Amino acid sequence: MTCKIRKWEPADAKPLSAAICNKKVQDNLRDGLPYPYTERDGAEFIAAMLSADENDIFSFAITAEGKVVGSISASRQQNIHRQTAELGYYIAEEYWGKGIATQAVGQICRYVFDKSDIIRIYAQPFAHNAASCRVLEKAGFKYEGTLRNNAVKNGRVLDMKMYSLLKTEI
Image (cartoon, rainbow, N blue to C red; front, side):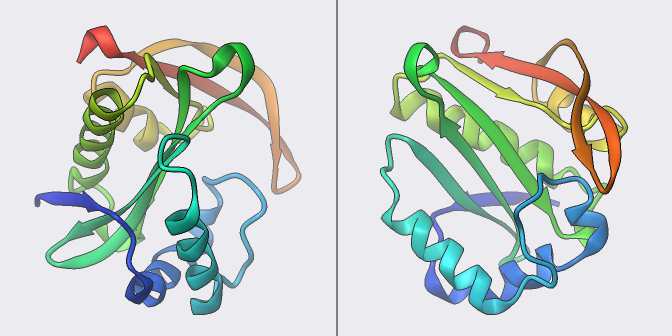
């Protein structure tokens, strides 16, 4: 199954909320997202992404079969890390295991490296999220190490893995 990333549109709020209003999806994301995640939450997120500085936040809808099935973004870091971006993504559960995330990661990395001065993109999935680690590895990211006891999610202390892709590696 092939996917494309594209800029957000206001009409994407409903499918966005459907994709993220899933406990299994949210259990692999950082805290701060409301649950349940409503269409209004989606509309507010999309409005924020559409008004964000396009040189600092690279945010896209992930589409497959003509539908929004997830979200992907790379966020520029600050200070001495200003040419580094953190990658985040999720896919609706019914689209897991179809290669969509790997394709989307490749597409956003090429976009960010081509359109900005970013030289490094990194991601920090939970260590137990083997599927997300595989996505990054298949997209060419290198494993840099495990960040021990780096997060508290759902009352559990968790390790995270650090992966990165350099502009020179694409």
